[in-house]
Image (cartoon, rainbow over all chains, first blue to last red; front, side, top):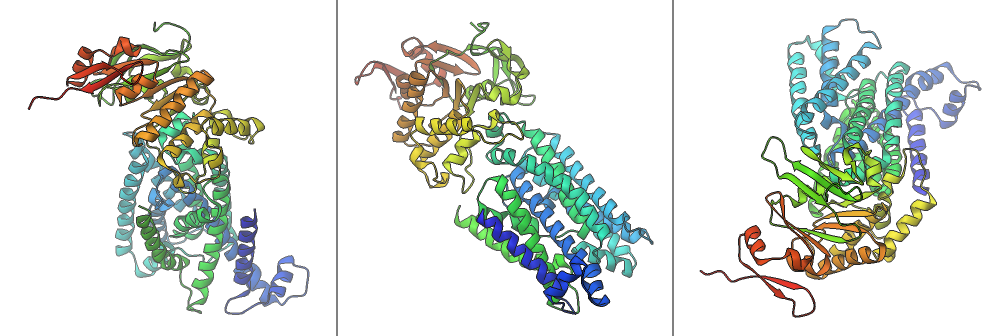
Length: 326
Length: 266
């Protein structure tokens, strides 16, 4: 499809621009030679491209794609255009875990924070499923329980931050804002190991999402085991969004916006919608990160702030459109 | 009758929601194969619950729904959906969904997890579009269609399931009179031309009499009257079921009956 070709092209462009620009600009040609690793390149350029910018842009691409997939899945199973992975308490749960780790543990191993934040996300997700399932799962009940639990864990995180030493609280706040700042291959590994199984699961469920968006009864009448599909989908969201949060902290807006943009481009069927959301999520996050790095340079704004700043007007636009169409 | 091994039926079926008193209690039913059956009765009589139970959308509290003598809970979900399709009322239509894509979703129970779309799937979709005269709307988004066309598209979707039994929960509600007639004629045609077994929950007594060959009148979770219009539609039964006086007259426009509420004294 031509749309996909265009999307890949935009993503490639965004990645190249992101690799080239920074406090020290590197020309695309030098970037290419550095990546291939064959030519004579200065040690400084090589360090900048290979150890600073490349892991960062890779992290932005994978986290953005994971959030796009998780958002599309959440909107399908919750049947709500305002749904995003954060509604299932994933960000809040991960945030609480991160706050605990950053404030309580003095010398954090590189793998500890991603691991524990992912556990935090998974645990909240499981708790929501369990609590909402007591009286029969409905999309609305999942959302309400998710919002409630999200508020609770958010309050817990704030409580810890209030009594933490200022330096720790500061570091935690940067994490909670969502940041690609100290991107590295270890974090990227977390996103990939968690995100790929999640992506496989949602790819297998694409056709199921197409019929589940109508209503439980329609899906059931067609022979779908609705609760099985829903629980696998929630597991997939936990893997995708949990992986994203483990790699970059909670990043708002991408999971909400990417599916809507994708829907406008490729229509309604999930076998197109899912890949389009993934690419769009990647594009959004690479661009947001570029904006976060460059607008106030040399100050680096957390990327989560950039996405939130773009996200708020978009949300307003979405509500306005929903109202227009009744 | 209920032990009859062929076709769809219910034996001592009891349905209840939560711990509340049952909506349907010990109901026996045997659906007439190859006929159009109308399920009628006042609000809350259990007719929607019954059709959901027959469609395997709700689990019986006790008793059983049987298909060809087999307990429907022993069927896999998809296997049942290849034999019995059911159209639910007021389903949402996602924006941008085309008629063809919707009808294609009717192929869900015929497809396995990794199976590609096949020639048979395409052929089934084409047949369903033809039967419902929706061929020319194939690429139209559902939200651009009129109420009647929309409902025909949904019927095409369940026809693409290629089942021999079709259940419909209030297929004409929310439609104006012209579209109601259009849908009922279509169902009638599917029964007479394709030999489908159709059971539909209807609200309008006169439409049920005219278009269905078999009527089931329910009240308080029980079947109170069943048979052809002449056998099932009795003034005393209607008065008892609906709680108002309803006159039954010969239809002046042809064979059949006409029901009309009698004026109440004020």
